Image 1 (cartoon, protein in one colour):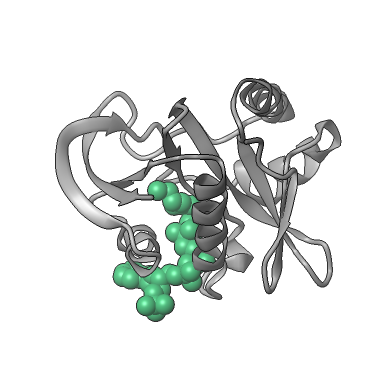
Image 2: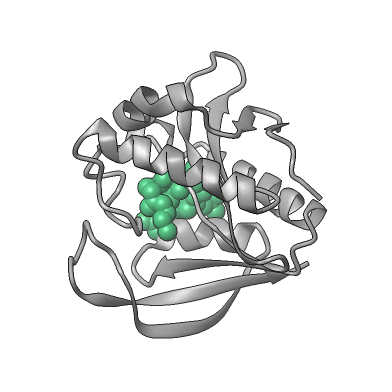
Length: 178
Ligand SMILES: CC(C)(COP(=O)(O)OP(=O)(O)OC[C@H]1O[C@@H](n2cnc3c(N)ncnc32)[C@H](O)[C@@H]1OP(=O)(O)O)[C@@H](O)C(=O)NCCC(=O)NCCS
């Protein structure tokens, strides 16, 4: 089943990215060095990177039941960040989240993650997982609050291009069976 293009939670609207979102994504979070320290993609140094992300997003949505979502504030419509589902098989998907600096510490990531779990369930995902740098406690705290469990430590598994370029770091794999 295809996921909805747009989902509302108590305070957020999560929706499929569109071509004219590039500037807002670039300016709000994708070009911010602090925000992108622990993400798996390089900080966007020009808006062309952001346009490549949007092309990737379209391809994901065309191929799979869902793809990236943007997170907006329901009240003022401000772009707060991004999340989504990255499918590996029809039953297995990875999730994650990134928020603009001024949106941290208000429970938005947790609210968004609950919605992603619902979407995954609706789409027939059985195994939802996330990878997290072992020193990024704020991020794995969100996963734990949402019911994902630390399944195992994966030694020297993932590159964090903005933190330690070219080096594979230890990550925790968190998982939820749906
Ligand atoms: C990580 C991130 C998504 C968290 O978003 P958020 O909306 O602030 O998260 P929430 O408010 O829903 O929950 C954060 C939890 O972590 C806790 N926390 C925050 N900083 C912490 C720290 N340094 N150590 C331990 N726990 C921490 C908070 O207290 C809160 O838990 P609580 O509700 O039990 O008090 C946000 O900081 C972010 O976007 N960072 C940049 C991008 C990023 O790193 N993404 C993850 C890549 S794996």
